[in-house]
Amino acid sequence: MGTPAKKIAFHTLGCKLNFSETSSLSRDSLKYGYENVNSKEYADIYVFNTCSVTENANKETKKLIRRSKRINPKAFIALIGCYAQLKPEELINIDDVNMVLGTAEKFELLNHLDKAKISNDIKVVLNNDINEISSFNPSYSGDDRTRAFLKVQDGCDYSCTFCTIPRARGKSRSASINQTVNLAKKISKSKTKEIVLTGVNIGDFGVYNNESFLELIKEIDSQVDIDRVRISSIEPNLLSNEIIEFCFNSEKFMPHFHIPLQSGSNKILKSMRRRYKVEEFKSRINTIKNLDSHACIGVDVIVGYPSETEEDFMETYEFLKNQDVSYLHVFTYSERENTKAIDLKPAVPFKERSNRSKLLRELSDQKKAQFYKKSIGASRPLLVENNKNGILFGYTDNYIKVKISSESSIENTIQMVKILDFRGEYMLGEIIASG
Image 1: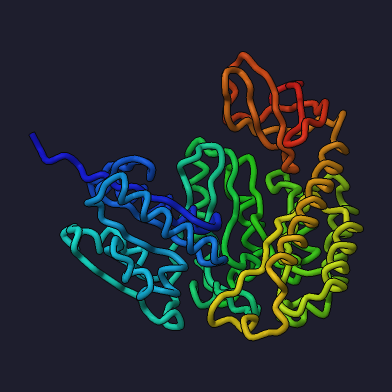
Image 2 (image 1 turned 180 degrees about the horizontal axis):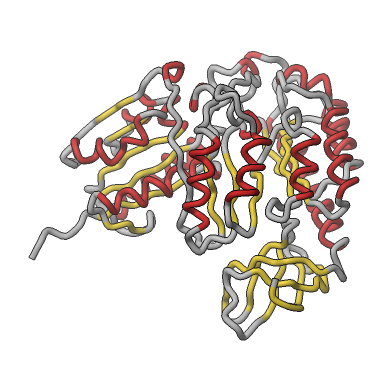
């Protein structure tokens, strides 16, 4: 009998971009003869794709390392991702960590594991200067047959004062439109029904290739045989009226936009070095809602940024309260080393940050309820995602979660449903006809 395949477990922290990269590495590991297992199971090697957006993300990485060692005390631990790029020495000095790979090296993970002759007493750090990284490594998630996250862009040229991403991922870069479309075509040949375009700053796609994000989505729309495409998140200053109008005229691109605001105070936006004012953000909302009042709009917002007064926060709160948005992603400001914001004074007390976060999360619940209830009586196409004993859930084109019942096997199909009632976290619906 041959030697059993080594078991390798991947786990992703942070954004959908990390998720797409982990998924690609996981698929590639099969070619190297590994057996993929869940990170909560026994494995010979655990690979954690780390995030460093907040201090909590850092703590979560360390918690996962401890969990893995409890499962298998002799496990080999490899760390990749943003935390690994920013703090390689801190991570390799953790007793149980064997390998730390920076932003460029993570895509060579499997080669590095091969060369390392996996041993529990190895310590390897490979971490290039982030300013020297210019290559783009395409990736996509393929574990969920319903939806795939396609990485179309990486890095960021912006200098927002609170953000570590440019230092963790480098300058903005992307593949060509032709290469990206070909990857989307590859996804479309699987059973996947929806592609989500993701990146650090996807509106900057093609900035050094003399191409644009608008040109990319036009080519995907015309060339890729896929039912649905979503844009994960796009900066308000890069979300042009042309992009908005194109999406509404397309049958493939969904009426769903996620737009980072970060603050409803122009004073704070200026301090953050954001590239827009609240008036421009409001204009984007109005343009979208004038084209389709049922379009979904998600918003990122940061609370407790240093120097944010109670008045500044209330300006943000009132601004969002008066905008026709569908939900909020609320982030409590977290001090990050080597950012401009860490030196700003005064710092907002942690208790106050928590209180402000709670108020905005409550506002988000109200906004979501209003948006959901507005759909009662409407008919929308629903992509059915999972089935538990005849109870199915999915998302409409405008990103409303709907629960339906069916005795038929209709997972990963698009069904036309009538939305009947609001049930808090989801809407209740019934199938009208196949989409």
